Length: 190
Image (cartoon, rainbow, N blue to C red; front, side, top):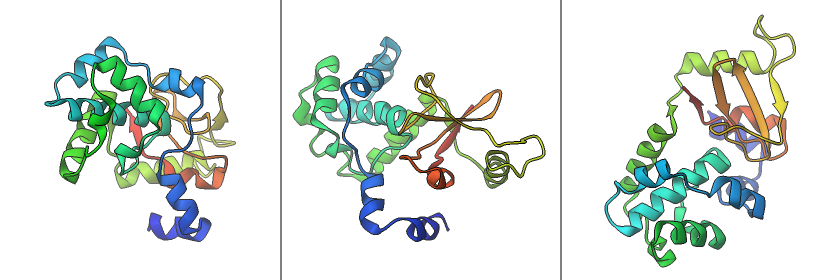
């Protein structure tokens, strides 16, 4: 259903661009690809340098974009270099990461759990949609706001933050168009 709706709004070429890695600014590189000691400890549990680096790219990309492109090894070179240097791994290790799709998926689930994300059930999608777009009686104007300084755990693509309730941060991707909002929301942060 979401796939059909997005095809009505975007061409296949635009969808491919939205699903991949965009160009990254120096500020984004520093903000989203600086690992904490806790992040390093989490990544250290993965076996093999390729997996450590691949999971690191997934973790930081999730916080940067709000999703992780399927081809993790196509991450921008400056991202790979920054993380590889910090983790003491050769950047070339990322080539071939996720050749077995299940490995990449398993790692992504671990990254999601580590980052505090959870799967959104159908009733929550409906509640979120109603709240964000004003049909919820608790919302007089919706809750879509912009921010140039998102907090840790509030994941953005174009510096757009949405608060669905006081204790729930919603991770969104808009790429400059509010109509994309409902199709790119990826998870709630618990």
